[in-house]
Image 1 (cartoon, one colour):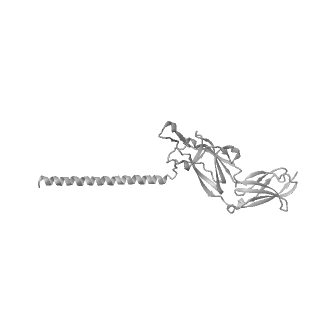
Image 2 (cartoon, rainbow, N blue to C red):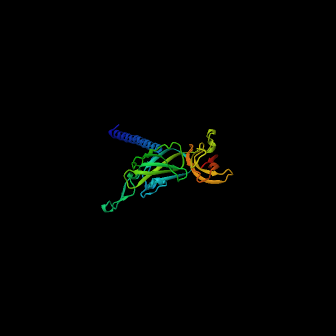
Image 3 (spheres, rainbow, N blue to C red):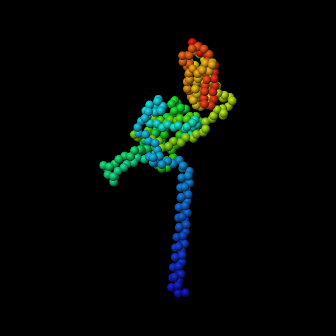
Length: 289
C-alpha cells in the first residue's frame, strides 16, 4: 500500500472521529438542555404562589377614604363581601410587589418622571375586622406584613389563621406602610368552608333565648345559646302576639350576650322572641316599674 492510500485512510479516520465526537457532544448538550427545562418546569409547577410585578395585578390606594368601620376614621382599606356566611381558616398575603420605575426621554434628566408604585407602598401593620351585615364591625386580629421583594418569584407569606371565624364581611385596614406615599397589596387568599346550618346543630345546642334578671325594670342581659351565626330580630310582643318593638342583633354562634331594653313599655307580662332566618325561640318575660 503506497503512502497516498495511507494518507487517504488516515484522513477518513479523522473525519469519522470528528463527526462521532460532534454527535456525542450534541447528544449531551441536548440532554443537558432537556434536564434544565424539566427542572424549571417542575420548579414552576411547585411555585404556584409566584406573583407578578405588574401594577395591573395589585391594589394601590393613594387617597384616603372613610372606613366602613366608622371607628377606624379615614384611611386606606379593602372590604370583602363573600355573599353569605362562611368559616374562614388559613390566609396568604402578597404585599405590594411592584418595583419603583422611572419614565424618561433618552434618559435625559429633564424628562425623568417617577411612575406610581414601589415596594415601600406595601402595607406593614394590618387590622382585620369582621361583620355579619357590613355595618356593625368587630376587630378579629392584627399583624405585620413584610415588604415584598419586587421579584416575579415573590411567593408572599402565610397570613394569620382566622380559626374558623364565621362571617360574611371582612375588612382589611392599613395602619402603616413601609415608608411609601401610598398603600398597596398585591393579593390576599382566604381558605373558606361552608358555615353550619341549623340542621347541623346538635340536640344539646337547641336554640333558646335567656334573659336575666326576669322580672326586670329598665334593661336586662339577653343571650342566644344554640343560635347559628347571623342576624337575629328581638321582637317584643304582647301575649296576643302583637309586635310592640323590634331590635336587631347579630349572633356569633357562641351564645352571644346583649344588653336589651323594652323602652317605655308599661309593666306587665310579655313575650320576647328571637327570630333568625333558620331558627327562632321565645320567652315569657315580666316588666316591673
